[in-house]
Structures are given as structure tokens and as C-alpha cells.
Amino acid sequence: MKRTLAMAQGLARALAIVALVMIGATILVRFAPGYFSDVRELDARYANTERAQLAQEAGRSKALTPLLVREIAGWLHGDAGVSRQFGVPVLDLLRPRIAVTGGLLVRAVVLAWALALTASFVALGTKHSQSIWHVPANILLAIPTAAMATVCLFLNWGGPVTVMALLLAARDFKFIHRSLRKTWSEPWLLQARAQGIKFRRLVVAHVLPAMVTQLAALASLSIVTALSALVPVEVIFDVPGLGKLAWNAALNRDLPVLLAATLLMAVAVALSGYTPMDRSGLERA
Picture 1 (tube, one colour):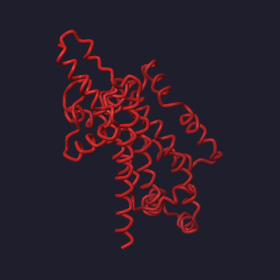
Picture 2: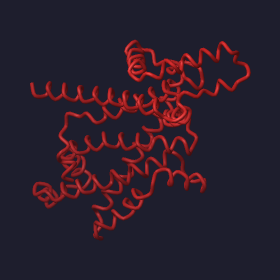
Picture 3: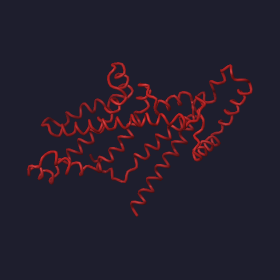
Picture 4: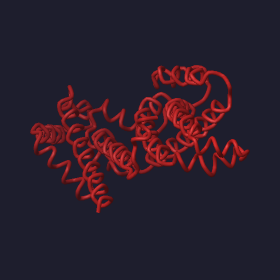
């Protein structure tokens, strides 16, 4: 019963997040400067009648409530609308870009976790001050994502996967290392080490199973962090994914495209943020 209630609460929270994102994105774009201007009005190929239709389209968007109702009703019927900038269905713009962004996120998260886990175990096995290992992570976290991507682009070193992986690895390392150090000093693990059990067996059979709850919670937070860095990375490296599409839509006040891209990211954040596992251990770490 408690598990069912927790799942229902998680689903309700996810739906609330998506609804708030839809309303917030619509309001922000609707009241953005120049929302009612349209570059097609400057095109000589458009006749007066077509310009009048553009004016009528802008008039229908002046009232906020009908605009929200149309957007929500369209999504409920599986229609994301037509791009204001490109004049094609929004879903046709999203499909190829979802694959590009998904591949980027998967590669970055996998590489980040490999770096974070490796650095955590290496730091655990050294006799130097443990705080020294947090210095590189703190430096990477202090550098803005856009600045890191710009430097890598100018130096012709790395790429979007490298930038996102370094950002995620620096953040994940701090949590993994602290949690690993705490688990490593548990009495039952100290006894196992005193009995001469090999390091690899200790890690596989004892350490990782004891940390599975915290690692699962951290994995969901890694996805949220990756999504927050998606737009500057894709824009700077000219990656044809959802982040760049959302950026162009914001610049051109393309509400249907911006709303669709934002909703997809909100759904990903809501789903990754919902986990039946307790995060209290991660917060204490």
C-alpha cells in the first residue's frame, strides 16, 4: 500500500512539473518582446491577403487563456503544432534531434561515471590527504559550462561529450568518494579487510551492494545535471539536438517548438527525479 501511494505521489508530482513547465514556457514566450512580429511579413513573396492572415494569427495569440487552452488541447490530441520559424510540424523537427541528444547524454553519463568511480577508488587507496582529491573537482565545478565548452572549442580539444562528462564526473566524484569512504570504514567491512579478502571481491560483493541506494539516487541527479548543461554545449559545439533547437526557438519566439523541447526536458527531469529509493543516504554523504 505504501509503495503504491509513493508511486502515485511520484506520478502526480511529475504531471504537476510538466503542467507548470507548459504554462510557464507559454507565458514567458507570449510576453517576450517582439512576439507578435513575424519575419514573413518582410518577405515580398507574401501578398496582402497572406499578411492579413498573419495578423489574424497574431491576434488569436493576444489572449493568454485561449492560447494556453489551444496548446494543451493540441498536446492531448497528439498534435504539437507547426513551427513558426520553419513551417513544418514540430514532431518532424523533434524526432531526429531526440536521437542526437539521447546519444550525447548516454555517452557523457557513462564516461562521467567511469571517471568518477575510477577517481574515487584511486583516492581511497592513497595515503595522501583525501581533501586534495576534491581540488580538481571543485575547480571544474567552478567553471561555467559555456566557458569550458568555449575553451575546448578554441583549443580544438575534446568535444561536447568531454565537456559534459567532466562536469558530471566532478560533481559525481564528490558524492561517490564521500559515500565510499564512509562505507569503507564500516566495522563489518573492516573485519572483512582484516581477514585478507581481496580488494576486488570486497568492492563487488560488499561495497557496491551497500551503496546501491545512494548510487541509484545519484544516477538520477546526473541526468538532471546533464540536461541543465545541454543547451550551452549543443549551441557552442553546433550539435543538432534538442538543446540547440530550443535555443533557436527562444531566439525566434517559436512557441510550438520551444514548448515541445521544454516539455521533453521537463518529462526527462520528472522521470529521472522519481525513484522509489530513499535519497537520505545521498544527502548525508
